[in-house]
Length: 394
Image 1: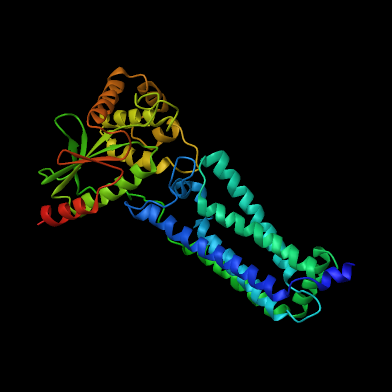
Image 2 (image 1 turned 60 degrees about the vertical axis):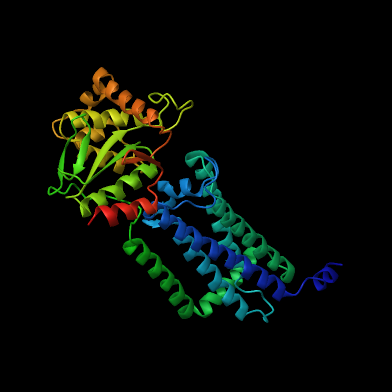
């Protein structure tokens, strides 16, 4: 009966090309995720099609520091991983007429590693990021399908266990050790090159303040940077725990650097923190209100822009930080001073005023940009930017 069942197995080529198609789907998905990850950090207008809700949002997952592993984005590692899968499939195709199904046990072990990685990434999304990416879920499904088909192919065409087959694979590798060593060393070289030389576009570091750019305080008491006699004033309402705020601020600071004699950027605070912001009805961006107070205290010590940049750089990393971490990077400031500032009535009133003004202007999220008394939520429309850079920048 067992032999009859084996004879009724579908042709090997059908299984092979099914696995090939699944692998190509995984590769295409990894390429898409890599492009999306790049755009999340470099395109102020980018929004993924699967950025649907707080719980289902590819952009939120990309914005997490967990989307980077050993200085390389996870989707890039995905491309690298599926390339390995395709190399194994090509190798397995070479031995399709042999009595033994070489390479498939190795394929199973690799797919098992990928599936384990998928489980870890899914747990990180659920327990730490609290958001899931649909295209990431697709890659997880691909990995589990590859694992299943690797097991299925071996079961259909071999009598022994996967691990016995792995022993046969090892004998094959020893027999052709020069060829396989070259292949493994080539993959290792590619991985090391990625780790050492992949451009860290996600860091968005401002690189310190340009001393040639003027700074000051408006007559209303808000910090500004840019032109002393501006043709146009851009006001940002920001939250230090908002990734889009960091990206928008990074873009605006670059804009100011390029047009420092014509543009002025004014910074104001709008933390989406239920402890400070009355429109927030449930815990969200907890601690962003205290970060805003630290920035207000830094303004009192004439260190606003330095601390502003520091806060944007610190938030969103996997590194822990506290008032001591921040105080160490400020001039003549102790951790105790920053803790005391949280209860400073004057600073709390200033923050309350910023929030109240924002609400009065219809702001219900961040970043919010005001240009010529018009409020733009999330981003600045391209036609407005063209108007600023085209008409205003003569």
